[in-house]
Image 1 (tube, rainbow, N blue to C red):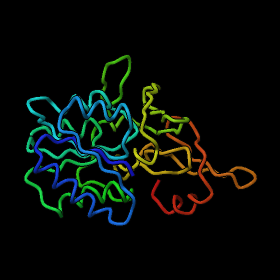
Image 2: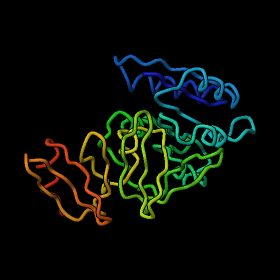
Image 3: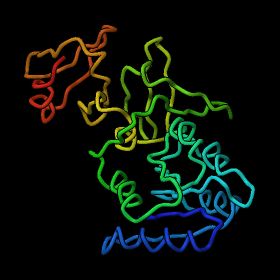
Amino acid sequence: MNILIIEDESRIAYRLQRMTAKFFGNRPARITVCDSLQKGLSQIEQDLPDLLLLDLNLNGDNGFEVLEHMVASSFHTIIVSANTDKAITAFAYGVLDFVPKPFDEDRLFQALNRFSSPSIKSGDDIQYLAVKRSGQIRLVNISDLIYIKGAGIYTELHLKDGRQELHDKSLELLQQLLPGEFERIHKSYLVNLSQAEKITISPGSRYGLLLKNGETLPIGRSKYKELRNKTI
């Protein structure tokens, strides 16, 4: 477990480091602390973390620059900041949680639990996923998403208008971010069930999910019974 903390106040950085180490306990975790924006960006380029704890005000520098550089990267980010007015923007960039300062152990542990337990969802559903194309950041409305397909080291976002966008986060990481109506139906597919029409069964007990746009996606055998019990 590789964890990076970007926080310019040494007292708060130490608290974050101590609490994070306590949370993970006996699970191996390497925790690195950077006290400036540039050091943090350099560390990320050298060694991608599994989890980033990020302040937004770094000696006058804007922590959002990290999100802009790494907007679709393959790690989760938890914001720890007093700038609560930036929470909605932060969630638009695909952060896992926003912990307001001052914080206590319980609140930080709540955020870390979301990271370590994929089944735990936020109380506030995100409305957008940020994607980066040709150096520009675009926000994809969650309501426009039909399904997400695993594609090697990337994932493909399939949208209602027929467009596709590439995202660097895995299906597992995106499932943690997305609202509950997004269901993992197969090792390679995450689907918005509001876009589902019906379950189909082909010869050889091959299961599929017919979507409202006419596409049929495969359903994994282990997922069929679970999905059959849901309203489609």
